Length: 415
Image (cartoon, rainbow, N blue to C red; front, side):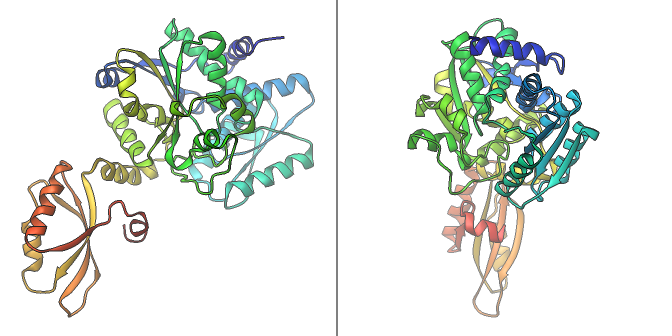
């Protein structure tokens, strides 16, 4: 019987007909910051700007080998999996039908259509992914096609393992630590299964978005569970339920080795990587780099590989990402000020601002002829510590205010 590592090696070799290995690049900036030898496995530089092409290609190749007359493939995806399937369909010359939610941004639809060309049909169905998935599976059963899961498929898992094959080959040795993002678990399962056979001394650290920590929930509960609420900001990894097959491969991972990354901190990492390194990552693609902050104490002096899993970033989201990054770093705050309705009150407030404090938002929420009016104020400053001084000056002058920066409910309505 062929071992998993041998199967992954064979799958990787066959991928060379589709694309060359993605780069493994040493990052000097991160290496200096964390006093370690940090390498980035640049899956954001694959033909479809994510690792998803690997699993889609391998699964499609194996299905066609087992069932040569299978010419219909179906998937449900709003992002990277759709693009990987589209690319593979055009490569193999087979028909693909890709179901996407009606709410999918046009940018993603256009990229999927570009990769698939005449080989694919895109169907926009459902406002939510669960509806899209159900429609895709019903359609697939009706036409006798093959449904390609984005992660819960043995052949997909085997294909994703090619990331680890390339890491060992490119580095020329086994790293001390590999840091991986986790969504549905296909990448983490494949890499873990390959390294368990080929380089068992490599330590794995898995990272989930805090608002979609389905693996953490499964490990804590002893099996896959469906999260009641998911924050879709990290859309490439925010999965409500880990796959059954992927959980089976990850069920004995110690819970302490699974990290959760706050969405706002991921935004700060995205901006930093873009500004300093010129690397465009999507939120899920930045998870492994973001986790280095939590791993700083254990990776010093070690060789660490971070898998940057995707770079399909919609730049229309950049203002939101920047806003969340500033708020996370503490240099931008919003508060509601109870401003006295008397001549000179506004001038008095403005005189309390420091030289590095800029007003980014000023809006009367309620103004009347009575004694006070409520004002929404956004302040951006050079250093987070400046707010301590500002609030002290406001307190000394008797101004009444409430910091609502971290109040999610109020922020959604007011900011």
